[in-house]
Image (cartoon, rainbow, N blue to C red):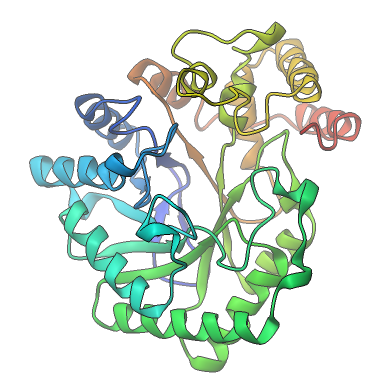
Length: 352
């Protein structure tokens, strides 16, 4: 598998990342270990997690469990030097630290907590899961209101956090830093403040990106290209919508939507499973079929054609699902299919 360097730093990773947010919940620990074994066999060495995982749902009693699952695998297999590990500090949330926003001191504590659970002495990429000033991710764009933000307060916060990240990097606890669910302005400011302080530069930004959700394509892409920041794209299959399994409004047993409903949620895949989203999915499934492609393989291969640095994060509940994903890797997307995707995107520019 091809290797890429995150941003302008020195952390080299596989061009595909394995997401682990289900490990310890929908995916039991032995199955999670089997998935990491299989991913490594396929050349996927990059693992992404977070202190708040597992999700669907996030529960106070399971916070940190996914990192523990990964740590147990590392301890059992001795594979630490064969993989790159990314994790994240949670943003403002009632489930972690009673909703207290993170600052430099909390970042330092959170890094140590992740290191303990992961049973390692270093984190290859440490990410800020959510901006403390607010975000338009996860469908918050429909009501996003930045008018209450204080620019100076935000810049002071960035300097405080970057100082803590710099200290952790000097201590060898982290190798590179990144963001998640950030905006173009936020990414630009993190880079500018870091440059002024001679602090670690943001090497990556983990934002949602798929055939159905392409807010990254314009302003964020421009900032990332000019500042040499790599996109780690989460939900490249739109939380499973682009697998086609929800066609016709179906909610298969054991699916993410079904599990969400069983725990009192709406079962809308975080607002993705809308009439417009389903219609767009049907169109992309038909397009893939017309060109003799599996929709899942097409959705991942398309990401690697983008005019900016991107590492898709794939995730699976079961080993069979992961095997299906892996089977399509390395297959180049034909130019005629890429152009057809561009035309279809104009018909469904923002389906949820």
